[in-house]
Image (cartoon, rainbow, N blue to C red):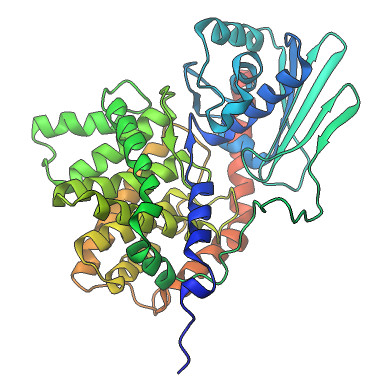
Length: 442
């Protein structure tokens, strides 16, 4: 029987490291409103004059994911305030940390702009799932910046009817491509990479632990979002929850999401363009690693396995969809936890299969404080899936969309998200828009 080529001969380890460095980056705030803030900040810099008015357009999916989330530092939800603070105080060089240097005056001025209805927002009729455009004005002077396909991918910059920059569609051999294909990758490749690559080449992933641990600690203060993590901590004191590994895992993971969705002024380490996905791929692994008292190298390898698995699975999904991608990030966490507890790919694959049999199909109804609940549910599913795997129990290939082969199960999940949930996504958005219209009427 012909064996597959080693990953060293097809997807080299150095290429996978580039993929992780591209998909695992810090971000301050939910990445969809931050994308619009980045467009507005870049447009304001291009204009070079105080911004008096903003006209913003976003794709339907970005509208869905930006309507209900708190923008960091503002204590205000939605895309209007994101565009305003981006234009008034955003740092375009900060990329996903564009709002890191906001001042109280800039926030106040942005709120005033929104209150005076000087920020307009509409849905753009575009094929791009992820699309954000901000046009800023000072008198008759204007500048417009368009972002598409990924959260920081500026495709066009215009000023007063002149195009200053437009992304080329032609291949430039002198520029490293920003796209990649994981179509030839399989879980055995990821496992080999995570467990054998020289540790000094992947040490950077420890930053994910540092950032998301800090965010979790901030969330435990109990002042953000639905404060689920802090609530669980209080119930430990009442005796309604046991203070065990599962509780700590859920509490600390969820607290980080509480803080992020509640507008904490701290960055999260993302995965595949999402802070909640980055938190979910990181914190369960960190908590289990601390429980086992493993060394730094072991934690790093577990985090690499988790984050790369999450990237691999998410690569089969649309960039934004009706399927909550926190579930796929938790599949990465399940892989990392399974490896920490049992250093064998068999248990890793069983854990992922169990998760696909459990939470596949959880919907994304926009970014909001309730995302922390989905983080909690997915983290719990991941831990349960690992415990089943340790008992050598797995959802079989005869059940639902799960296949005997884990890579085929992942493909089936991607097919469900790409083809089966398109109408679901449209219905979710329509319900949310109807709510927004009714709220205005009331």
